[in-house]
Image (cartoon, rainbow over all chains, first blue to last red; front, side, top):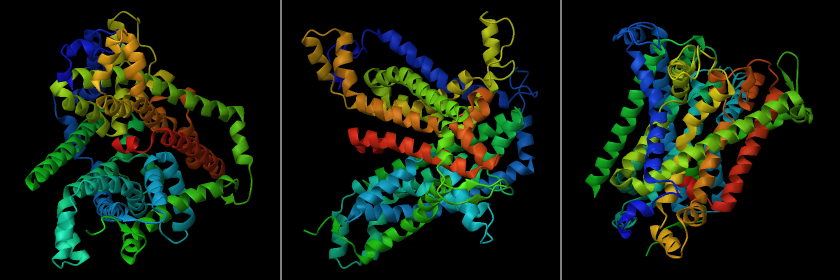
Length: 279
Length: 288
């Protein structure tokens, strides 16, 4: 697009704002986005308890992190919940995406709306409504608030995201291969597992990755329905922050941050490579 | 040629839709119906609830004590949206029209902080604004203040945390809207004698309006229902609807009133989305 303007740099100017003003403003916004995270990481390596004054480099807080059994337990809970919820949500979400993109039926608009409603409903409303539901229905049945209720809730709020991601992949897919498979005598089930699934796998994996990240990071919904016994990592971080600022939280935040970014970048690179390999 | 889209209901379709219907029905829809029912109930002293048709929980919202909190939440959310727009629009504009080959990298840079946990982002500001933190040191260094002043647990701290957390939600739809913009339209404006400001205000900006609306909704909704940021960065002067709801469920055990507040919040925010979809359509929301 820029090629169509001979004096591209001038024509693109926003109102009367000069280019350097726009540049300076943008640099400041990026600084605003990154400085707090940089400060957080920086002080996780501090040698004293201060999160304000730099006194020297140490890995002490990372050491404390690894020796705190409650943090490790919370991490284990988060991973368990994340993996189980992701598996269930990915299967259900993929099925839903197939139904919505391959079929036109009465009530599809309702299904569509329900999927979107689940993604935009304020988290706090989802959290308290699940709390009310679990306490009124599950607890009388003998199921206490805990890992089970957390997994159920995480599946409920991630299904929609998986559906949307997989559906996007399905809509970009060339259907003729599937038709060829069916013409060659493959059953619908065989066609799905041998042809469709391998083709939409990058989308399914992207959906799964998103589901895992959302589950691993969720605080608000989990906060209401976790009960007393089980704590996920975000709940643990919250109670640590409430207890007071400490470089251990900085260290833990840094680890979570790096892990999340690694997961997203690693995952998306994997997906890109897969897609390229298929072309 | 085979039909590309299967029409009507079949056993296969029912099987594909059964799990999602059951799961979202049981663990999304029914719980919502529960709070609607509870919102018309009457809370008992020890945390129980009697169902019935009691509109009192909704009327309680008009109690000045609570009304103040609700109005304040909407105000903070609106202000957050405005600040995000003021910071986000020039940035999105810069990325689209000046980003050149770094465009994708610049967008990615906006998204990265948003992938980190909300809690961690709020904690970063607790550290910066707290006690004699970096913010205070900077103010003293610049000679603006003489000694440490109270920065955390103020409305400004909450605004800061919210803007920080939701800015990417504003930039991404703005970027998507501006990216589709045909630069030739701007040239046409200029050729017809419009100044830069006129071109911007009468051509570029109106065409980016769907992005502005999408971004505003995406920022406003989570801000209005927020409870983590005011909980960690705010004080008694910044209690928001989210904190009030949390309080009804976890401390005062007035589930009926808490349910009524949740229903109101959901209706208000979903209403805003419906309004948006009517005007702009769903494709923009999908794009984000």
